[in-house]
Length: 357
Ligand SMILES: Cc1ncc(COP(=O)(O)O)c(C=O)c1O
Image (cartoon, rainbow, N blue to C red; front, side, top):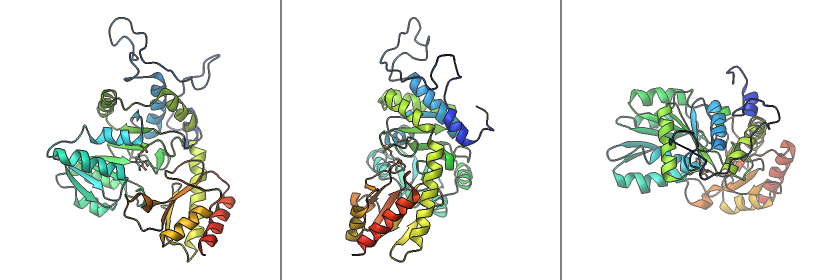
């Protein structure tokens, strides 16, 4: 599709076949283990469902267009993270990793990379800290905005510094989405996302993807996916492709409501440390004690207490309940959905009053 089309148009048409008489906009999901394949093994791109599937091909074409690089879909965001980290690093390699990032990535590094001789350099999501860790690095992994601290890095500046140091740069782009940040265009080598969040947006799918600047890297990711079987089901991928058409309206509306809610909360003296980077649907704040945060969460009527973010239904949780993040007991991560902004504000303000005692 033409590069001149704006993002709201691109998400609606991305990955769809040209209009054909009597055909649907988005072809239905293809369910197959083996495909008919006569003669040589490469006579068709589709021979066996663990290696390739036309429903993945269409969704990957859509994501590739939005990301600006060849994209490979995985069974989950965690599978996408593992596909980047596990095959790429071995004895003597140095991985720079956020100490304040998504816990599963930290655990993967501690339990599966460090024992094979990979040196892990833990850094906070802060440009100077990442730069200081660069000498001798093999791969730098950043999360921006970070989860749950919502700190933001300048990917373009960082990509230059990382490449000058001879390392590769992978960006977890889950919180931003390719509508708010396109890491490959900013110079990163890989853009990783949990598609379980905004990309699918209805809190009913678990999926992940990796976009690569270098097609050879994308091919290596596909090989890893086929070997490990970290494959998504065709129906899930079809639903994800269907959800992409509304990505722009969802993100635009959710981001605007989140900005407005952050402004309201910043003006109150009973809510501390309100964090929102100015884009994205997630905001965080501190209600002090665990009990107060829990009363607040229980008093919300249209906001479900749940983990994850990026869905059409607003949700919130006390992040410290998992014991995996360095946050205070009253730290709340709040994901803004598609409800009316006024209704949401009223619900939050009423729950804050209830939590005041
Ligand atoms: C920033 C980030 N990256 C990766 C993941 C892993 O994604 P998934 O839950 O789809 O496996 C998550 C999940 O919460 C996440 O928040």
